[in-house]
Image (cartoon, rainbow, N blue to C red):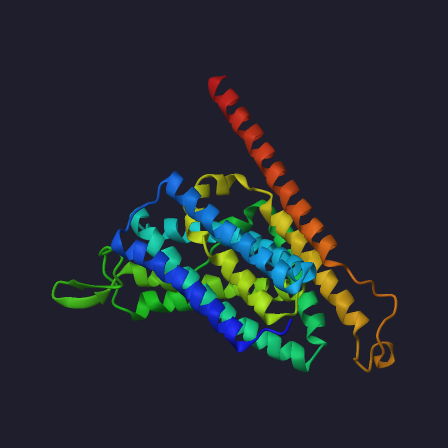
Length: 332
């Protein structure tokens, strides 16, 4: 793709306008969205992503659109996994439900900024050093193995990092929340509310997740424009999805296994592509490895969709069986 500066500018302005509208709605009326409201917003954002892909298909061809859809689906599934940790953070800090929307939106904005920086850095590295795909691939395989080992308990593990612990000790924190404000006056003294600690927890969590998601999408497409737009569309609507899924998130017990397979597959794909374009002097004499196969985008999309579908269905079946057993045991 040869994306002009004008196209980049139009895309950024349009996406920023959508986020500002979202922010205005929350700022005007903080509340816990209903299932209907959340469903409509999620459908709206998913529809936008699908329409954007159609536009790419008409202007740049099916291959480019396929790369976008595959990248968007991968990033969307990884973003859903983020929601597990967000739920734990909200519960850990007892954030009132009506203010969780603002926390999530700010977290999403932080994630967009961080991922934008990672995308720029990744694109610069790839343009200068093709061997970086070996590192990306190895990192994704390592992450996949860790996810598979953690299994069903992966979402339950949230440890306060150094920055959060330091903030608790060093900053004057009030005893309770003051709406969604970051500061409040308590006994005549200006103090930070626990909302600031929540924001720090969300922001640092976003940073950790970006380390997985950016190498993953670069394994699908090398085009920075597609990498960026796929990430933006995956994050938009994540706030409403959080409230829409609600208790369903707890039932997706095999999602980590599915994501492990997806990340492992993309990691292998990256290493195979690196071998096919190899220029490392100590590997095959600096020549490309002829036997390394190219995995087409349609196959990548098929593997990702099938893996996530199997993980979702298996999770729902398993959780339904467990609930029936619990009910039967309670009655007995």
